[in-house]
Amino acid sequence: MRMLRSAIPIAMGALFVVFTGCQTSNENSNTTAVSNATPPGAQKLTEIPRPAKIEQMMKDRGEQDQAKPTLKVVSPAANATINGSTVDVKLELGGDLKGYMPHKDPATQKGNHIHVILDNQPYEAYYELNQPFELRNVSEGKHTLRVFPSRPWHESYKNEGAFQMVEFTVKGGGDATKPTTTKDGQTMASPAKSPAASASASATPAREGKDYANPSQAGNVDAKKPLLTYSRPKGEYKGEDADPIMIDFWLLNGKLQGDGGDYRVRYIIDDGEPKFLEKWAPIWLSGWNSGKHRVKLELVDKSGNVVDNGGYNSTTREITTTK
Ligand SMILES: [Cu+2]
Image 1: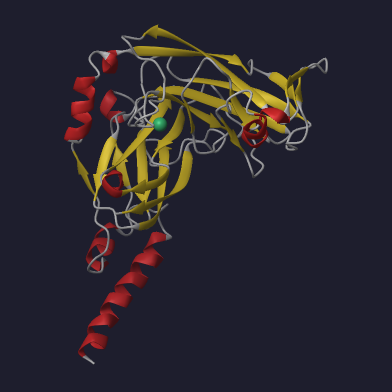
Image 2: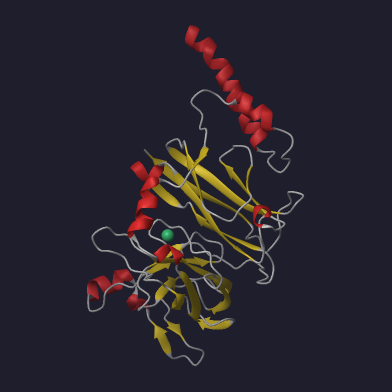
């Protein structure tokens, strides 16, 4: 009986959080109410300094964190039309590298890599630039590709020229049984190069790449307008990787208010209250409960309105954490 009585206010508190969580567009309405109503045991995230483990990795890397890597998208060429559902991504790495080179260490399964983003999907990691990265089963229509160099702990390089975006069009896409061909019908990539096929053939190692199970299309993006690219967090976090968790993004054509500009990045975790980032730098949040979480990142102007750019400036991802 005593347990039941104490459970009622907790349940009501939880309900209150659910209802106010729907009003996130009206950011003035609910901040104090939500924190008062937070039931015991609820997630309370706090921003903590860069973890010592990462500081140590930076020291061990020598000068690499001062590198200014730049990328050039060789393929798909800007505004190219690709026949077939497989799109080969080829990149050229340049700039002041200071030893920075993407590569996966077979022992640790970690290393420098490039974040590759089709449309506004979660990024894929691309490690070995000497062979193309395959986007497989890409649907017919317009697409964007965004790329930028990243560190082993997934923090992006933010120097000028690191980020590149191209638009391209796929004709006859979305069917993985069809080969990729050039405009003249010359075969560039065949389905036989997919991991399943090459595993049985075993002549060539499986290429890095990503199968897109669900059709994805480009947003109507203007490459000259402010563009927020969601990078981290994504996917599953386990054990010591599950807390703290880094939030990181790329910002093109705009500065945040703390960097002398007009914008802020608003983030909302689950049904929590909106928080703001004033500077373009990663943050680490601690206090995650185990389970599924929603992470929303938005680029907002001085009035708190999302800066529209093809829908890319407001992105929500689901992640899973297991302690
Ligand atoms: Cu990464």
